[in-house]
Amino acid sequence: MNPTDTGMPPIALLQLLEHGSLGPTVTSELLDIMTREGVDLELLIRRGEQIPLRWFREVYPGLDVDRATIVGLSVAGEAQLTTFGALTLPLISAGSVADVVELLAYLPIISTALHPQVQPSDGGLTIGLSGHTNDAALDSLVVAYGGYALLRLLDMLTGPVPDLALRLNWPAPASLPPEQIPDGRIGFGAPASYVHIPAGRLDEVCRFSDPVAYRVSVDNLGRALAARSGRASTTEQVTRLVERDPASAGIQAVALDLALSVSTLKRRLAHEGTTFRQLQQSVLQARATLRLLDTSLPVSEIAAELGYSDVANFSHAFKRWTGRSPREFQARS
Image 1 (cartoon, rainbow, N blue to C red):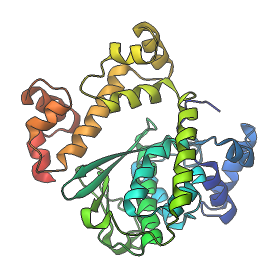
Image 2: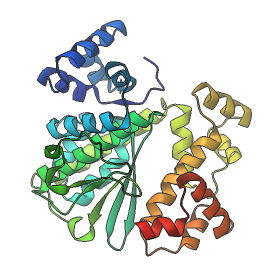
Image 3: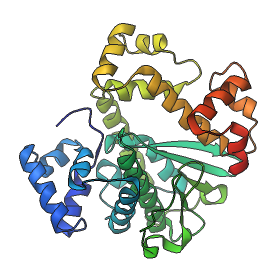
Image 4: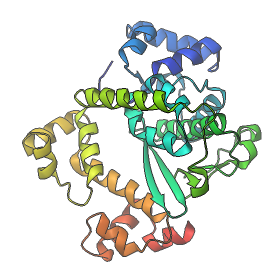
């Protein structure tokens, strides 16, 4: 397997295969792929490695956003919510919804395909969701799966939370069965893909709270994430550094942080199929979109936070990314 592949937890795939959730044809084809690539799921589970999502591109010929959305929602609706590997114990022992949200920072330990960004506001927390597979259909699959799985997980840990909803920034698939849109909690055509948690829900107590187990688990997660960072691809490392300080993370500063020359950094990113500018623009777009969902924030404040010298430059960049000006985006939000 390619170490730069974005992936999913092998334990989740193991349970999908054992329960037949993907159907006999897809199950058989996935088993054939694993045989071809010499993959042992139980060994990968012990090692904490990930399953490449490109396999879904193989087993679903002609996969498009509509089909990927249906697969993602269907699988999330049937998923065993104890299949999150190293995150399982801290999730189950979390004391509140806020604790659960904090654990999203450790998601790369089990999956590099889904990228959440948490933005606090006076009204609560907005969790922006984006896929990192470099494939529009697979991105839709992981965002639909991850967002719906998060709703189901919070329901399980705190009791039903009907005021939480998943918003997806693409149109509803024409063939999506109505029963896969539970209680109107999944909306389409939003300006961005996100889950918003109202402020009053953040202190909601989880029913299996165990403070000692939670603290111990988070310490272990911190060590696991630090160990994984040393094995992370250059793309992941650059993305993380740009996210930490998007206003000043230019290519020279990032290369210095990674103890690389600029030319070596460019060469490594090219080998992984990307460029520094592509990664930087992706981070800026995601951060800008998430910030603009909070319509109380002035556009000038967001522009300055992201390192733009004036609102005009920021507006030009945002319109290039989305086809809308920041103010048009906020009006739609």
